Image 1 (tube, rainbow, N blue to C red):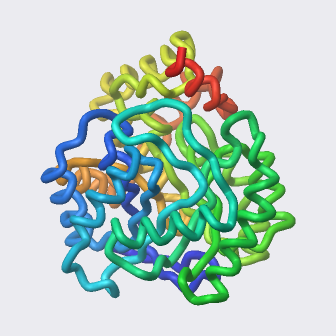
Image 2: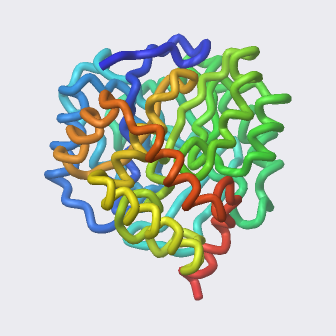
Length: 321
């Protein structure tokens, strides 16, 4: 698989990368053995960057990924995890957000144990926009400084953030010393606002990891997870777009993966899967050109939700109600 430099991080990442959120059951029940096979299939097909977080499944995703990577030479892959957001094992509920220096250091030690490595190529400050941004300034002061300290100590290679809101991304790119950025849901069929970040990314050497080509399940061809904040009427536009693709002899998920992964301005596109078959399928799709006429048709259908700023806090509140 083709690889690309991730900004000035020093990492040469595969065109597709593997997000391990699904291994923790974020999108539905996950079979551990099949998830491990999915990771091994990704490695065999040339995927060399894996991302995870302790919040995915209440540490379950890190545990499964650690089992999958056990015995694999460390120079075969790059690894990132996240700090600051923690979810109770076994289900959804009120997440704990803690960006204190002490907690982030403890979190890194805990991830080290679960993942079987004492070095992370990237660490992302995770989801500090949640809980109505009560913790954002904490994350971008004490939290960010804690990661910069860990980088100076040689425990991590690069400092990054993993969040959603575009206004925060502009602030980060313009004012903060990050090496990379895990930008999710902003370069997909229904949202292309990540393009706004490219000029500063190139100027400053920030490596953009383009995540969520399937729009957190909206473009999967199946029902999006219950935690997604899209309303029933908004989800209907995605159903119509999926039906259009079926009429044209393809699938919305195929077009979504192709579109997101084939822009050379984004070094890598990160998808999540628990099945080896899906990994093989995504790698094949990435190499196949898409139909620009179909793309235009689909984006016309999705026009009412194009560049929609989703309120993920509303999705969390819905789960609690």
